[in-house]
Image (cartoon, rainbow, N blue to C red; front, top):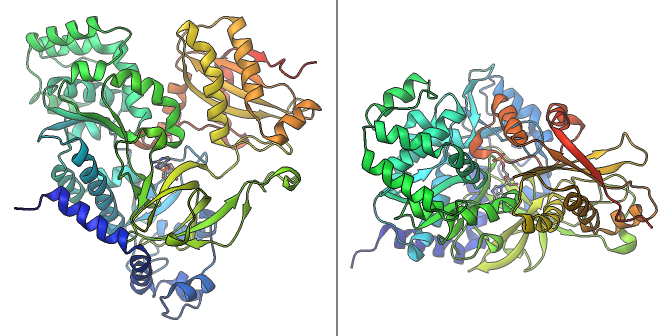
Length: 581
Ligand code: AMP
């Protein structure tokens, strides 16, 4: 019997994960051997040693800002071995939506290979549960602008660096995910036009579509919210075989001349199916009858979109995609049948050297009057030394010049696949909301919004998107939550939502401060519809990619422009009375 592609990928992963400790040591040895000549490592006095002990004693834990001067030299054209043995020829720009501005990060062939390995691994496990035939996928993916740095290097988002590579495209064909849309749409000059055309291509090839995908789930929800508004125009294009005049990019128009021809039968059938839907429930299986699932990153800051995604996906399973960052990939979802809320990521022990800083939440008196002490940290442990149920911050050493780099993500050990841990993503490490002794993360905010959002359900309303801010212009300062709603809500409902939000932040620091009024009543500001679209457009203007976009869940003083957009679009605001006596 011949062994299938998927079986051989699974066998390879099983072997790696059974031997994770040894593979880690070997991976570190390779990284240090290949890059031993890099100035950064030479200066730290490793002297060619490649064992974990010497590595940890010579190389310090760093954050992005520690490496920034080195990366900047590379960006400016220094082609000496600064961080890596072989010079870096491409730069990735992180989405910048988590920290307010994009970060430059080295990109090279090794990162490309590890991406392919991660994608193949999760595909193999997915395909075992939900086999797909040869066909196409409806992918909401978008290249972003490429810029040439002062030193002549190409800088673009990590996803764009991938989408452009022939090697990546060929590997994706192998895992049967050929995008319905031509490259001209993926790399189109304008996001709105590309989105329109992705939907149009998806409809043209509707019978062939095997699954629906975007890198982050936000893009799928955004696409179908748009679909609700433009579906009739899409039908007209298909009926008449003429591309809408809203598509002005000549490259896209030229590409469509080969794809689009009058097809009134298809247009009528789409029209009929859309009319038969109730509030767009199950639109994906209705229009793409052969789609087996919906796929994309659905964890972390994507969780708030799950309700809407489930609504559009109807009977189709949602499958959460892998875990990684512009810094490099970390883990693959090898348990695809788990719902996104429970998704875990098995670390691939050969794509980097991973350490984990144990984090403990301070209890009671340990809560200090210092917002930076949110967790109690201890010495980092190795990949196979982590303990079930504990939380850690990930530290990455990779083949692209990052050594003991703190990623800033908090994960929990949810289990083990053989001897490699399965991580559950918890949140970004950075605090979002803090005024004095209160400490609330993105996850705390998400849970608060989820709680308060339930009060809207009776009126069939939903939170389209949300973010937060700390307003210290009042005395005392207070939390501000910005909401964009799907439709208008009554003052009565919004007042209750506001109180509910205030009570939903349950950390002792917040509750205590609210009781003694060292933090003022929480304020809920309701935004005009379309405000988050303006924020997305703002980030796109800065060169961010839709494919990596994550709504910033906190807007601080460093992000003045976003705060201005928000403040200009407030239609109403409410103050909590939850702690009034
Ligand atoms: P960027 O490099 O800008 O694309 O952002 C990378 C960050 O996105 C990571 O550090 C995580 O915080 C987040 N992220 C990536 N993959 C996942 C995932 N599967 N689940 C939750 N968050 C993720």
